[in-house]
Image (cartoon, helix red, strand yellow):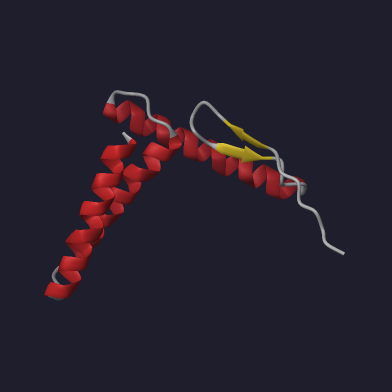
Length: 100
């Protein structure tokens, strides 16, 4: 006997996908709290950039920042690590530019 999972997907104006998959009220509350936090962070990034961005675009920006931080902090370990981190940083910047 298989358990059926039925989910309804909705996309908000900020680019978030929400589902009705969470039947547990605690999980649902945590999910909505996390979602509101992401939306607030996107609004903060939007204010800094002086344009409106959605959550997906904000996550691309955070990804590029993380790649840059790793490059700066860990790039001096060896040449191979520096090349790999540089490739990660360039890839994340390209993805960020495409998303914006």
